[in-house]
Image (cartoon, rainbow, N blue to C red; front, side):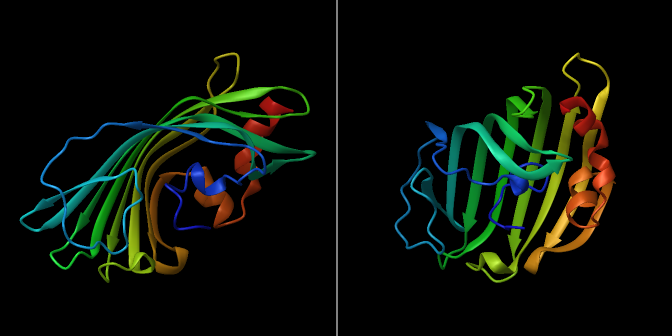
Amino acid sequence: MSRTTLHVLRIVIMTAALGVSTIVLAVPTSAGQPATQALNPPPPPIYTCKAVGSGTICEESQVVVDPAAPTDVACPGFQIYDQGIEHQHAIRWYDTDGNLTRRIVYGRWTEARWSNPLTGHSVPYTQNTTATDVLATPGDFDSSTRTERGENVYHASDGGRPVMRSVGRTVIGPGDALLEYSGKQWAIELFFFGDESVLDGVCAALG
């Protein structure tokens, strides 16, 4: 599992598809006194940074349009595809030495769905998440502990009751160690404990 992903619920299961492009639309962020110090690690170009008394704060807002692409999740006889629009806002805090100490990423998905390319059936879902990384060693992402909170709900295409749902809190430490989690979370049960039965409702809807 990659620690560079936004959260355990959705992006952690995404697999990049060759030839499939992602459209990113930047949203202007508030300006301030430009940062003058070197930052470690440097934020991606989409971030806008400003100097503050405690160091530097960098922010970005973007809309990411993900076309249909295969995931790491499969049902008997077919691979699940995922697509949707992510509305993201992220903030990074750097200390007076220019080293990253904390990051928060807020994500909201719209027009999102899983699908079966063999049948054309799909399962729409909604998702809202907040992921917070706290770095034990400033500037070293490998030392971060990530706390994720949110909800991820999959519905049958006929608008019936949810066929799969995640809600709760997850804490993942260095080395992708699962430190704690609460609530009902299909991704934790599947990827950490190997319980494939959590997909039964989705697989039946897509089959």
